[in-house]
Image (cartoon, rainbow, N blue to C red):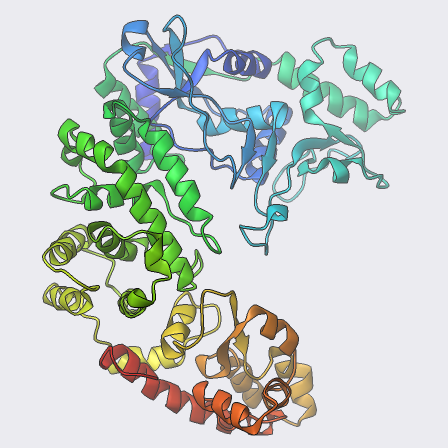
Length: 597
């Protein structure tokens, strides 16, 4: 409420302009009369939000006012500007394209309304490609290109959210498939239908000229885009950047929150002389995030890494840390910083870590600083001489990720202190020195009995699970794709099957809970997991390990003593393996790093 009140007070002191149409607005975007300042973040709306915006416009609902900044040539020359996204691709093209300097220097920058205007631009002039559920980020088929369509045969009856019109993002193939009761009109076609008669001509060509709902829907869409002055906006004409920045922060505080790093990035963008800071950082973020199985690093992570690896006094996100001298230092070190982060991403990918198992990006910064100061290159990843060093770094990293509270409060002070430790040592990864410093600062990596018990009961789906398994079973080569597998397969724990065994409701509930606990989980290479399918463990081990010695070795290494060909011994197996796992957890997490498993 306060944010809305503040924003309304700010807008009340600005020049209110005559409302214009969607078509006029998008024409101005196309001609680069409207641009985005560097302080704007990327497009973040999802398909459902875009469809809701179009439905609201069609129903005549207000969609909020827009705030623009009219920038004169003398001011605009000091800034970089960006175009609106049109062909948005969540993985391959998620960034607003940079613009060359405007020819006449006069430009209007959008301070509030970027998400809505980009949604209109994508829906009426472009396409959208976002990841499909349950598909890997590195799968090219996970991001089908879709365009906005309107179902002309959909009766305008409000749904549970009040939407009347049926907008959806569809592939051309899906939209073209003949389905009874549907006719998908490509919304982008309405952009060129300026004359009132053109919708009727189109409908007649499609045999829909006498279909009432189709006629009403298409005419309504045409009027909404070309005729209705639905874009209400204010213009700020002050050339005082501090005032404008303050307005920007206040008006955006009630919507999609602008991260502080976006503001700091805009400062870096203005101060770098030979490179485009925004482009460099976005490019690096994209490269890091497609490494291995994929990560979810942000601009915040890369900016903080830049401060840390450039040995800038403090790694905190403070304006004084982004002064001209520090930004000059960061720019001059950028190539080395970027390469160290790429190497770090490849290293942790070789540990088997990904977006789903990295619980705190900041934990990677000491590793990155270590690789940076030692001037390691890609040979570090495969060097036999560095195998023990990689093992030590992995052990420290995963323990710090699993230990609660390490990368929370006091983060900047901790990172600065760990940087000093690494800088003051030579040789291999200084895990023991780092742990001593962490212990002094209340960030001990010694696990309490309570924490050990919780880890022994880790459930399937936990972010800590994969890392914990790699420490417990270090002989598993995580450079290959591994799955977390149920020792006794999930399929045998269906309530229907358990009832047939004569088990009580309490017994069934206990078994179903235990089947997802650490004691019934293991790491299996992807191909092995698929071949195992729903086989019982004893049967699968017998088929996989033909020799008696191999079977004994596999069972011993994976702590699988007591596996059966049926469920009768599951509880005994579970209890025994949990005790063995607990002992190994204590040895691995609290014991000597040199202890072998």
